[in-house]
Length: 357
Ligand code: TYM
Image 1 (spheres, protein in one colour):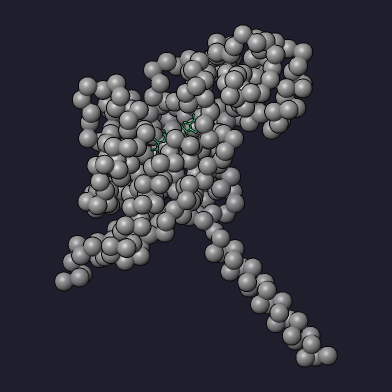
Image 2 (cartoon, rainbow, N blue to C red; image 1 turned 60 degrees about the horizontal axis):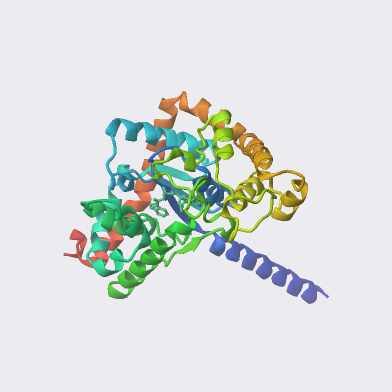
């Protein structure tokens, strides 16, 4: 009997340590970034930032970066860029990114990003980079294409690999960039030694591509010159209402979800669903007595309500620039510690380190 109890106990012990090990093993290293090219819009929020917040709250090791080096691939006014960095910091904190649990930092404050980018660039090919859709899209209307625009996906791979991240929460438009990163990690590991995990993208299918308000065949985008195409998290309630009222729907007045044939109204239903937690069917049923013009007012109210507490928090944070700078400085220290460990390992593997001599 004593023997049986001991067997049970050791089984229990083995089982519980197995669970603990699995939990430790399952803990992900999350990395993601956002460009400080203006306030985040609904696409950035639902496609990325909200997911960052939930991954942070699931006890993963989260590292989030305001990627200012990426933003200068297209011309930026220095004064405006600095303001946008502060604005983005306040927005991310207001959206729930907690600098005590996650590392939140400014990319240019950690020079190892540029260093690793150079090393990865030595085995990236122009053929592969020229096929990336974002490059094609952004360079389309330019007479002269800056080199930075062409090579920035390598910098993005360096961002991820520097922290040995294995899970990358992004919107759909970043998928090919994460695939390039997987490819570069594999090449490096095979060529030198296994240093990097091969990361996976985390993409939430429903909100991976929030559409533009007036051109619902395109994604909502920060670089769109027409502000009417997006709602920014800093937009006051009356502007949010105006943007939604002016959004493009179609000649059918019923509120029905059909993204293929009715992309405009379906995009509004999706936004409404994300703001209220209601499913599409419930939303269509509840609003069947309204035409799309009247329905837009319902959507606007839901969006305004959803972002009210975030905006309140954001305004509080924006009035304390010293705190915001402090958060980024703390983040820099923590990020640099990890980044310098990885870059030393990389240099050692490549033969660049003095300690190899
Ligand atoms: P950026 O600044 O363009 O966008 C930030 C995040 O928002 C997502 N997103 C969207 N999601 C859904 N619907 C939309 N309409 C929409 N628009 C944007 C983007 O997919 C992204 O996740 N190169 C990146 C930043 C970056 C990065 C990284 C990301 C730099 N290094 C390393 C991940 C890992 C960019 O320009 O994102």
